[in-house]
Length: 583
Image (cartoon, rainbow, N blue to C red; front, side):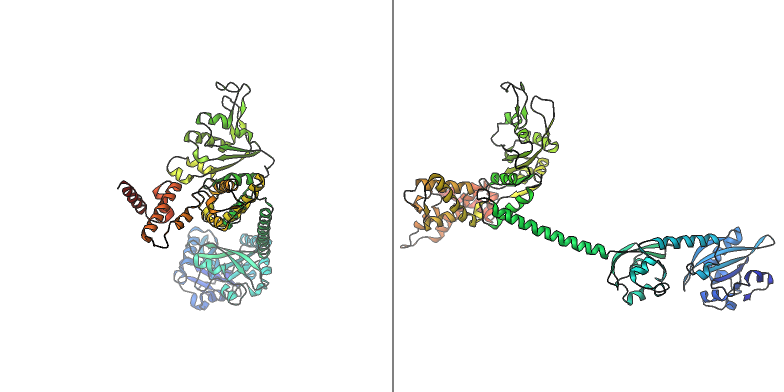
């Protein structure tokens, strides 16, 4: 023992020489009066070198707390002291003589060391015991590391997860545990580096996967004092996740197989196509059919939008309910509301004495098909929007709201997004319709369907009219090369016309309508014997294509986009034609 001057310290310090905890005695003037060997190891000096040193020089933070105890006479427990060599927990206890605080007993040690724990006051030991019980009761693994990354405490669950004994973990630097391959990454080192909570998935040497979350505990200076790590075994969860992904993949495969089977079993009346593009449209239709989602079908006139709407209805749970088609372009504006929502008796002059249910009401528990929705005037759009938002309606002349359970399918040959930009169609109504959009490509973009439909209509219309004819190779070529601005409807009409009007058993090119024979006419007008002006022929053909595109698309801007040229080129060619005609 090394002591300073008075023998009064002997009763206090006599049993501290062999203590594993560091003990200092500081007098009222701030001079170290006693230091035990354990304290010497903490400060890396001998007790003799420490005694007589001003406490402020030895450790300023310790002297600051000790001086507070001298001045107030109150003990200070559980202070944390950060030293270069280690972190220690410090208690400052006043020692009285003649009614005054003559010394401060400074006790420094590792709070997790049971040998040192006996030197701490009973309240502290109770807290430490409670903390120990809390840690060991956790099913998750718990680690506590100090600011240097040294593990100071782990619970049994953490040892069970890692498969490591306690003596191989506690007191060791986590970097060494990492280098030994016990885990593939260290959440502790990340927390110390980033000074924030960190979560990561770690792979253990045992093959297990754990979800580790490290949280920093800061001291009064804002530095990381400890890191608390929570480990949870996710090996089982990871296995279940993989099994779920496999099940979802199998379910998706089953759905795809079911869709293929449904497509194969569909009759030709419902599935008149062979192209990949149309198969994708039908697959989407079959996917959405079992739901109640609103569907918006877009495409040029004659592509088969109504047929697709009927297919969705037929494959839905509402198949036994009504399919009610509303032609929005055909209903007079003055009658729109009464036709759509119905009216009560006496609602207006000429109204039925019994009243009349509207088309919406008739579609209860079925499907309401709003065809040509792009033609709906703005004043009627808001009325339809109210119904779509609430699925409730009031008859004209009535006062009672009725709830209507119906699935809504809309169709249009217009670009509704462009109509919204042009302020001709309400944007909120557009979004109500555009839940599941289905675009039906024009027939000219799917030539494989033209070939199939030719055979289909020749057979079906021939049986209906008891006329059996075939197309000659030349006629078939012309039919395949025609662009069909009226799409499927036009193709069907042409087949029916030539079946009835052609004189022979074989349909020849001269039996076809003029618009279909244009390509052949171009060939026949070429004088291969005498030659012809290639530039002029190309200009004529170019002009014909521009006129045809303008007839179909309506504006020079759309024609330019479709033919991939500038709008000025289109305008110039049309201007040249007009000037040539004037001359």
